[in-house]
Structure formats: C-alpha cells, structure tokens
Image (cartoon, rainbow, N blue to C red; front, side, top):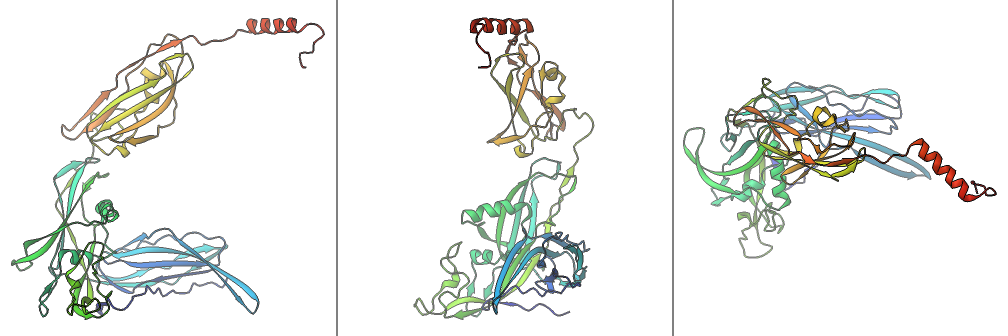
Length: 468
C-alpha cells in the first residue's frame, strides 16, 4: 500500500470530492464521494452525499461499517444555481449531507451504496473504498486520560485530566526548537476532544489555550526525553455502567518534517498576530519586515491512541430504591414556596420547588408530586411532568395546585430522594410544610340567582324591554 505523502503547507489544499454518479435516469440525481481515498487510523475524512434537482427526498442514513465510525458532520448545506444561456433560464438546486468517517483500525473498507428515495424513485450511489494505515507516531505524541477515582456510580461526578505529551521539533541545522505554543498550534482541527470539547471551546472563545510546560519523560526505549506537556481538566457524569474508555478522544497532530525560509512576510504559519501569541518562527534573519522568515515546509499527520486508567462505573443499586427516586446522584436539599397562602377553595396556588445539590443540576428531575397521596388527597395537582430551569446552584420547578375544600391549613412536605455515593445509600429529604388558609368559595345558589333577576325586572318597570 502506498504511504501518504507529507502535506506541503505552501500550496493551498482544496477539499476535492470525487462523486460517483447514481444509477437512475430521472431529473433528480444522487451522488456520493470521499475527500480522501487513503488516510490513517484515527484521522477522519469527509464523506458527502449530494442530492440535486429533487423536490422531495429522504435524508441519507449513514451505513454501519465494521472498523469505521461514521457520524454526521453538521447540518446539510443547500445551494441554488441560476444560469441564462441564449435567453433560456435554468435553475439547479442541491442539498449536500456531510459525514465524518474515522477509521478505528488498519484495513481496506468498503462503504456500501446509499439508497435514497427522491421524487418517487429509488436512487443508488456507487460503493466507496477507503484505505486506512497505521500512523507511525513513534514517541512523538502520547495521550493519556487520568481520573481521580478508580470506581464510581452511574451519574456520579468524575474528574478527568487529559494529558498530551508532544516531542518538540528540532531543526539541528538551524539550531531552532519550536516552542510549546508552536507545537500546540499544530494540533489539527480533525482532533476529537470528546468530554473535553466544552473546555477547549471555552478557551478558544477567550482567545486562550492550555499552557504547556517542558518536562522529562521516558521514550519508547526507556531514555529520558524532553516533552511539552499540556493538561486539560473536565468533569463528566457517566450515564451507563462499564469501563471508561478513550475511544471518543482522538488527538491529531501535524508534526513538522522540514523547516525552510520564506520571503513572504505572511508566509510563516505562526505570525506574531497568532491567536496564541508570538513564535520562534518569526525570526527575521535580515532585520527587514520583508526579510526571510522560517516557516514549516511540510508536515505529516500523527494520530495517538489514547490510554485510559482503569475506571469502573457501577450501576445504581436496585435494593432499597425509593419509589419516588428519579436518578439523582450526589447530595441534595429541597425547599418549597407557595403564593398566595390565603385563598378560597378551588383558587390557584403557585408552588415553587427548588432543589440544590452537588450533581449536574440540568439532569435533575422534579419529584413526582402527582403521585404523592399526602398532596393529591387535598389538592388538585397537574399530571404532566414538571419542566424546570437551572438558577445558579439550584433547579427550580413551578406548578399550580388548587385546594379541594375549605379548612386545609397546610401544603404538606414534599420528599426528594437521591443516591449518596459516599455512603452508598439512598436518602430522602423533605421540604418544610407551608401554612395556608383556605376559605369557603363564594357561590350563588339557584334561588339567589332567581331572586336577583326578579329584582332587576321590577327596577326597570313594566314598559321597559330588558333586551334594550
């Protein structure tokens, strides 16, 4: 198998997708293609399905291919092209669906044809072949995920640290060593950060990046070598039992293979106006703003396998589980508030339920108040689940209840159950009861209504028409 050639960074690289024409002779047309026919394990390529001149069609479903991960790459793009030739106007419209195809192992993969129904006919594309080889990373890039706990429960907070070791690139001839900022900038956009994506996005929004520090680490031969170490923290809440793995973290580094001089003042890949600051590659050998600068002549993609420390996620026990338990893990408190507290029977009472605790508040569900006999025996309670909103360290749920009869003097305590992973036990906490006053509702009997109508007619007199 031919090896991939280094990417020349001086020549703009266009994403060229070679489409295979669909079988079918209708006005509608369906094509598919890959951005690359060869790649490395862990280095994704783009697969596109283009549907043209169809007024009605089904969106393509990504196929399942053993050894490949095929995921949608954003929403579909739509375009319309209008042309006029010899006074005749023609219009072409198309919708393109993109998918991210990532090989998980070495091999030659056959991606089956897409079958798409468009304008009442089934169109079939050609199959596609993708060859994946192993990226010879050596000891240039090492990636590990560390956790502070060896065993946790489903839904329990797990603090993780992503550690990335990168060997600094050294140009022995020019005696130049790329800085930790330069090496970080070579991490490719194809990198999949998994649970660390939110942290990376937050840093980018603030024009920041993880700081690297130079450390010593043993290489594959057991010799101490200099590395740049980058650390990224994240907190996750596993939702299923099993072992934590690093399959959703894939770091792709475009490692330099050669440096060279460029007379283009903007030729350096790492100019002084870089998002992450200045670079050693900004050196001007001749003291002129248009003098030679160092720039990266070529790179090769390096993809590291992510090593993960063994962390076991245990299921929530079934034994002793309260009937009102709704999946909360951690430690929580509950409080309630009602307005107004002086009402007539049947009048609406707004009930606020606030829950605060140590877990992810956006995952907290409201207590099932419609299933509490202590509440439903005296109040009319909505059956539908309560939607809440996160307000700082708590989540607030709001509903409306109505007293069924006069004389009710309190809204009972509302229970909330959770699983405490520290004690490995279920705990139920209660809100404080709320004192209220419920009076008799004002009602008019039929006799009172008849007497009121008779009095009204007497006031109008015999010659007046009540209808006006």
